Image (cartoon, rainbow, N blue to C red; front, side):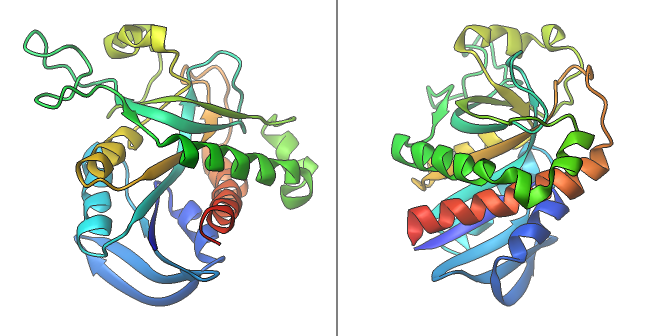
Length: 252
């Protein structure tokens, strides 16, 4: 088993790298791929950069060049569900590209010529991902510190399994985005810029995947935090801890 681990933030990659035995680095298409192990499992760790094209390219390299059998994607996201708050975690049950629109030839949000709108995460992997995130949050006060959590208004963070929406846009007004309105009845929980592209590549290559997203904002700019500080002090630690928990539970 070889696991590809992708992160959309350098800080996340660095926190995961601390938990990894790095044996080598290889640069391909302006990405630095770190190969080595977490415990006894072979891993390839890489910063994907932002957006659907960048993340799809990176996922393809993990699968085609490094022969990864499983892909983990971690990053931050804006909350779409009104009851999600900064510091909560969304584990993807499925992912959809909310900005895909080839209508009237194909239904809005459907990937042309595939018949697929929602790329589903295998239930067993999604369940394991939820348990890993819950395990990490169970001790988050000690791992990060209550004072630091309070700086970002984080209190009793939760884990939510649900649909993740992906598009090459920052969302300031959810109602202004037709694709998000179109899938509203499917109750998307979070919105970001990479997950569904990674999911599509994994689907095309028959490789299982999971997506972890830490909520950094409400996707409407209603909550203002120091984003750079949040990534350094919260999201990076979340990524490292949750990936480590998932790896140990899933791959031993």
